[in-house]
Length: 302
Ligand code: SF4
Ligand code: SF4
Image (cartoon, rainbow, N blue to C red; front, side):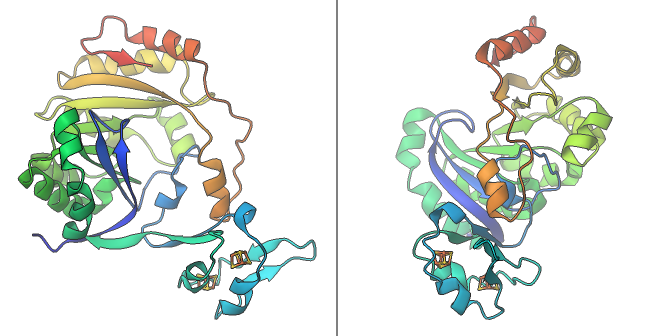
């Protein structure tokens, strides 16, 4: 088996929303977008991260004495602080926090190690037409590892899917597509200025890659996270519909409602989540937006 190694922050089994059937989703670390609503902010950086959940802390004080750099401290108000500028993410404190308030995110794994978990559910995949999905983060930032992983899954007759936001050079797709049975393409919004504002990056390369994929050989599901105030307008959806009309490989479009599950994760990484007021769009609103794709050659789910 290939000895490539990749950095992974989670492997979830029995997933039913990352492609057809029952799937195992492997989440790869590293992303070059910064969507503020991201529900996996621990994927942003390629290296390991220290997560801290104050609500789980039982104030045992162990981490204060264990940290070799003295990064844990109490403020005058009694708040537990971590000096992240000095923290080297050595993991010593997380290893001994039995309350589960501290943990490390990110682990280097080989293809064989990941396939041990993925292969364990092969009977479920066969019975449900499911398989393996590589997600992230942006899995194509580790294209060579993802290609090796999907190649091995294929060799074991496991269906393979790639979940990408597409902001990578085309060469990354070229490495992975020969081993991919389905691409899930996350599309944010069509307006370049708005896209840059809410994700930190231009959408030119993303749309170019989507157009190329849509005229290629691998079936494609386009998925739009519907974020209130960002892309939940008829104008945006009509523009998406016009763009997708020219792409024969699209098999499905999914409108995915925003949810606030990432808020506590942003804070566990030492950040502040400034969008707590955002609410998930109503089912009726999603249905209205789905109407913008009337006449499309593919089904739309909302
Ligand atoms: S070791 Fe864990 S539970 Fe104890 S003070 Fe540190 S974070 Fe809190
Ligand atoms: S990960 Fe290491 S350096 Fe960072 S706070 Fe914990 S013990 Fe200190």
